[in-house]
Image (cartoon, rainbow, N blue to C red; front, side, top):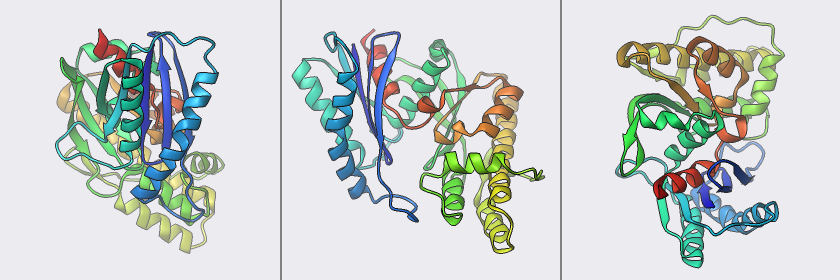
Length: 308
């Protein structure tokens, strides 16, 4: 049995993986109505409070837990020099304690690698780690395209090949949602609102090479709001803009790197319009929503892969 932890900026999560099935529990951090996020000190405190409850819920669902063979944890956002966020300390501390108590090795990876592995598991596509593929990590803090290749030390190495140069997709969604008085994080509610709109928007994505710029979508959404457009139409515009941007980025990247498999991870990948269009056009892999949003499944799977 392999145990995983992830304490991202907005979700406390723990998972167990027996080599075939993941059992996972997670709890969203609380953000006050009208606010766009949390300070790191507040996130770290909430994780510290949440972890005992999440672990308790996880173990209560398992009739019998075999010996913990290894423990995995996300210790930083990305596997690059200088990548650091204090909120991950809560998960690392829990993982160190569990590893010591169980006498099991501890394997640290990045939040991003955890996202990719969780998405592959959800799609029954973990075999993709044996050859190059393209992974998009699209969330509140990240809008990146990565060339993923096998790596003896890190299991997979994710090389940045394209990104948003300013606003991230999840930020655009959340800022629009807050403007419309939705509860943070706003992705699910904005998705629901957009589905109620009959408007069709033609947008021209802003690309610089394979990178994108998303600051314009926020400015346009504010203008639509000030001009009295409906919440449904504003939501539809923002989602359409992000969807078309990701579509154009994917197209350009595949032109440059060849017809590689494409995997989408991160909370924004849960959006129904994005999933429907890009999955159909590129035969892209999209995880189930609970494995797209922040979760500890990938770190438990990482522990298994490191133990082989």
